[in-house]
Structure formats: structure tokens, C-alpha cells
Length: 253
Image (cartoon, rainbow, N blue to C red; front, top):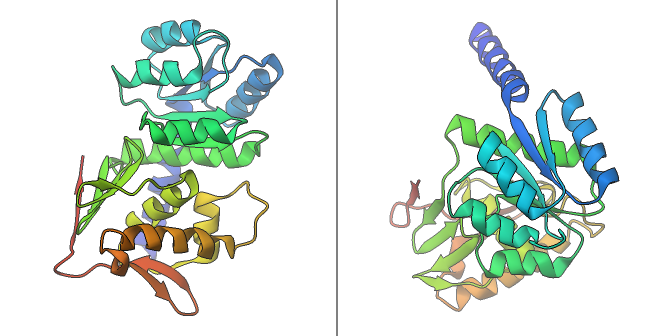
């Protein structure tokens, strides 16, 4: 058993190092200081990088270099980041992490279902951004990335960033969607407030109890479609999405 654990740990570490050494990240940022800092940190982590400071240049580089992941600033001059994301999604499912300083940009990302894989707000912690990049790339190469998670009548669409019950949009806020999608990734598993907080609000100065407020809103929105029982409170732990034989869980790519 020990040898099996050691071998699995070795393989996981080897694959992580291999992904870093071979993964190309396209940094799209018009602020030269931020762009250079991002490139510096990425190269220290052994990622290869390309850089663009406009949307037009970003698309040219994207088509020529075929990066493994795109870090895309929303507030670009001329063609903004949302337009660039639309163009990328029209031809590819390459992972895209959005960088933004404005909360309304996040609302637009979710409202239009543009298909960003993640977003992070400025100013951001570089180590947390690197962790997000690693997680997105690992899901991609491990084949763990599903476009749709289904738990009974609930559908969590990670590609369009929407949650639906019986086909009806729940109209979740960005934080509510992150919380629900994290719970949906492991139905039946009880998750602590701290785990949910780190998954949905890592840069927030709010208290962990903010998770309760957001999930209360999620439960209310589920209740509007008679699905409130899907979200369960686990006393002394946190929350989980119910998994039962009749509800089941089905994942689609």
C-alpha cells in the first residue's frame, strides 16, 4: 500500500512538472508592468509565455501559437477582453482565465455565458493565480473537465457559466455560481465553509460566514423551482449537494 501511494504521488508530481515545462500561457494585458510581472512569475514556475497588449494582437498570437491557456484582461483598448473571449470560443475550448478590476465585468461574463473557465479580480495574489492556472490545466490534461454537471433536475453548465433547474436559469451571481459548481463537482460530499470560501471567494475580505448568506440565496432560488432539497446543511461541517438513487448524477462532455 505504501509503495502504491508513493508511486501515485511520484506520477502526480511528475505530471505536474511536465505540464509546467510544456504548457504555453498567452498573457493578454495592456498594462506593461502587470504583463511583465505575470511573465516573470510564470517563467519562474517553468511555464512558457507569449504576450499581447491588444485584442487584435492576442487573436493573431492565439491562432499562430495555439497556447494551452490564456490569461485575458477584460479592459483592453479597442477590442476588449470580452470580444476576444467570444472570438476564442467561436473556434476553441482552450482554457481562458479572465483578469478584471470591475465587478460589472464579472456580471457580464456570467450574464452572457461567454465561457470563461475562471476569473480573478485585480489586485490579485500571484500565487493564488498560479494555483488557479495549475488547477485549470490539470483538469484539462487529466480529462476531468466536464462541460455539464447534472444532479437530478439541476444542470451546472461550466462552459456557459449557467445553472438551470428543469431547464430554467437560476440567475446566480458570480459567487453563488462558484459555490454551487464546487458543490456539484462532488455530489454527496460534505464540504466545510472554509473549503467553499477558498473555492469561491479566495481574494475576499469577507468572513467565512458569508458562505451561509450566499448559499441561503442559492437555496431560495432552488426553492423557486421546487429543488431546495438538493442543497443540504451538514451540521457542524458545512454543506453538500444531495446525491440519491432517484436524483443520481450524470456528467457530460
